Length: 327
Image 1: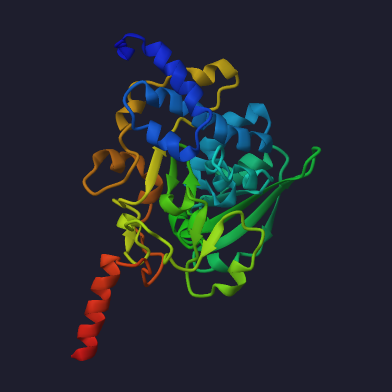
Image 2: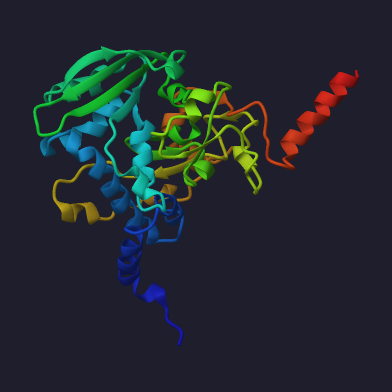
C-alpha cells in the first residue's frame, strides 16, 4: 500500500516532534536540514533543551532579556556548560548529569550589558584569576554569584582582548570549542565532540590527561581515527569564516512564558537558512548565519601534525620535509 505522506503534513510534524525529543543533538542538526516540516520540529526542541539549562539562573520575568543582553555584549555561552546541552540524549548523557557553572565569553569593552543583567537579579560580581589557557586571549575574568536561593548559582564571564571567538579557540580541549549565541549553536569540531572525544591542543599534555573530572575521552593525537579527516584534519589551518568543518544550527532564542507558545512555528524567513548546517566558502547562507565567527578573522589549527594513518595532508608535509632536508 502506498501512502502519500505529503497529504498529512501536520501528522508528519507530530511524528517528527516526538522523534526530536529523543534524539541526540547532532541528529537535531541533521533534521534541521531535512525537508519541511522537519525544521519546525527541531526549533522547539532545541529551545527546550537550552532553556532547561539556563532557566534556573534567572527568574521567569528576566528570561526574555538574557539573550538580548548577551548579544549586546557580543558574547556567547561556551565551555562545559554548552557541552552538557550538546550531549543530552546521547549515549554518554549519564556522564553529563551534574551541574556545572555557566560560562560566558564577551567582546572586549562590552561586558556591561550582560554583567548588569545578572547584577539586576541579585548576583554579586567579583574578579577572578584568568585561567592559564586564556591568558593570551582574555583581558579580565569575573565570577557572578547568587546565593539568595536554595542553590548557589555561579556564572563566569571572560572578557576577551579582541573577539569572543578568539577565546573559544584558545581552549585546551576541542570538545569545549562550542558556543550558543542569540541566533545559533556553533560546534567547531563536531566529529570528535559528538563522539565524546577531544583532542588536546598544544604540547603540555601530562597534567590534562590525568584529570579524572573530565567527562570526555582525551587524545593527544588522532592516530586512532579510522575515517578521512576531511575539513577537521588537526594539522590543517582553519578559519572562522568559510570553515567547512564547523556545524552551525540556527535557533530562535526568544523566551516564551507559556509552554504552548514554544510550539508555535517560526516565520518562513527562519527556514530560509535551513541548509546552513555547514559552513563553506561562497555560501551566502553561511555568511548570514555565522555572526559569532565573523566578529574577527582568526586562523587556527589543533596541531602541527596529523597522526591518522594515510592522511594525505600528513604525507604531503612529510614529502616537503624530505625535499627540504635533501636540498
